[in-house]
Image (cartoon, rainbow, N blue to C red):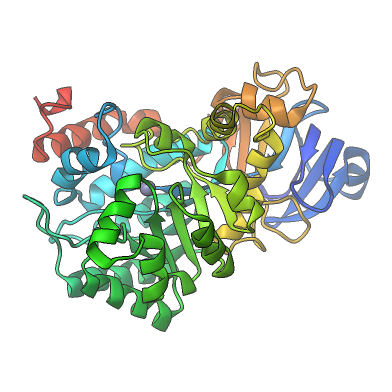
Amino acid sequence: MSTPAATDFVARAGHVLTMGPAGDLTDGAVAAEQGRIAAVGPFAAVRSRYPHLPVIGDAHGILLPGLVNAHTHFSEALLSGMGEDLSIWVWGARVLLPTMAHLTREMARVGTLFRGAELIRSGVTTVNDMFCHANPAEFASLGVVDALEELGLRGVACFGAEDMAWKAFVPLPVPRILDEHHELARRAAATRRIGFRLGVGTILAQTDALLEQSAALARQQGWGVHTHLAEVREEKTEAQLRWGVSTVERAEAVGLLAAGCVAGHGVWVSGAEMDRLAATGTAIIHNPTANMILASGVCPLGELAHRGVRLALGTDGMASNDSQNMIEVLKLGALLQKVHHQDPAAADARQMLRLATIGGATALGLGAVTGSLEVGKQADLVRLDGASFGAAVLHDPYQQLVHGAGPEAVADVWVDGVPLLRDGAFVSARPRDLVPRVRELAAQLARAGRLAKLSCLAR
Ligand SMILES: [Zn+2]
């Protein structure tokens, strides 16, 4: 018999959380062949069908689908750890806007390589990014695709365009913005694992001309949309003053919600708006860490779910999260609901893991590809080591994973059956080697954005 390909293996664990029709398996396994899931079931049965394949894992630990980080910004990869006391409008004006003209494709590439490794470390196999910049000299957002391809991550790329002039911020002209959407879509189409969405930074940060042309372009090209909606209370007031309607209503009126829209936040939404989000199939991505850091409010997760809105989880960008630790997001997502409602049953670990796996995949239109362990789907898997602090004692694997595990428990990560993390060691990524370059570019960006009040690197 010939030697099996490196992507052909049997992954075994004490608890296999399939997040699909097979439910939870005790001492279960997944067989991967040619990048796809070939079998899911009890270890003994899978082993007897695939006796020639190497077995990774043992009768302990947890095996689950790769996590889906459904909302982040690699444009903030070099901007972590600043401005913790700033509200969102001030934070945007002081931290983000001054740096946007100085972001380069190289910064996008290096930043994504570094933070993408952090995602892999916390079990993420699919990431939905929105790269926001205003550099007239380069299509900087393409650097994200360069890096995701190099890392082997599955992803969706988008250019989070904004063109409202504000103080010293000089926006890109509308035709230049539309050109970058086209270029990024072409670059993504040339890859195997990276999709594209048309990005609308925020509804309020776009002129009516750009917003209307963006919606028309998305419709024309059949592109999905990625934006932010109803993140903070001030957004409601400003939209009412500008248009006499909310941003959700404005987005629907211009046709953005008809284009398979994925929107970060959905914190400040009325019951009627929730019904519109559900009716249009708009997915709301909950980012509890960023909502807490920026004191934006508490996403009405229970009510959104009750009204049938598609839901997923995200880290949000590094300027409003400071890390890309997706396991932390699962925990904070549950804890925020518990304390807000003063009810420990307000959210649970199973719900959080569902949002971060099949919920995220479905929100991104990738439900047939990833998000659960089912025969025929791509072999995007994560194995937590049964000898780690986080996964050694498994009274309930969901609760232990969400509340007790961290990135150090993640032993193996595969995308399309290709190992990105093997026994705790990176295969495709070299984050430690990148650190000097990451520091250099972070200092360069902080100086260019004149962030001396906030950043030691800019002084
Ligand atoms: Zn965001």
